[in-house]
Image (cartoon, rainbow, N blue to C red):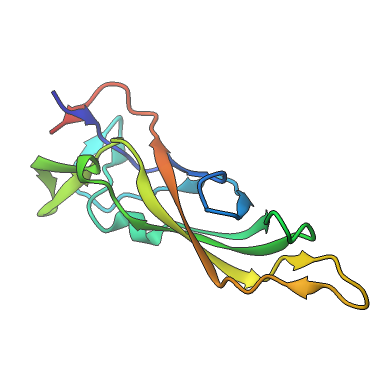
Length: 143
């Protein structure tokens, strides 16, 4: 049946509750399509465009580290249902809304656990989580 094609300007929403012990607060990432085809006048997103989504300055805490730290979110990889099997643009599969992509949160400034005489920093350098696409395209589907 297919799913809606992701286009330039659509949002990558990172689910801040899926990063293990880390609770990440993040604005959405904005997709930028490099496909030649257009939907509603905007270029379609193709396989590889997800790698350009970088959301920096995201705050996070953990169950023990209640003093917030910060980091950067990336889309690690798309789910199988987020790449069209039949429809391509510029020789690559178009990206579909699909289910959830895998995301990576890279810690830049560790969150800290309150402690005396000084706080104890989070030792994790990255957390894996999930996210999904929110598309403004409600007209064109692909499979």
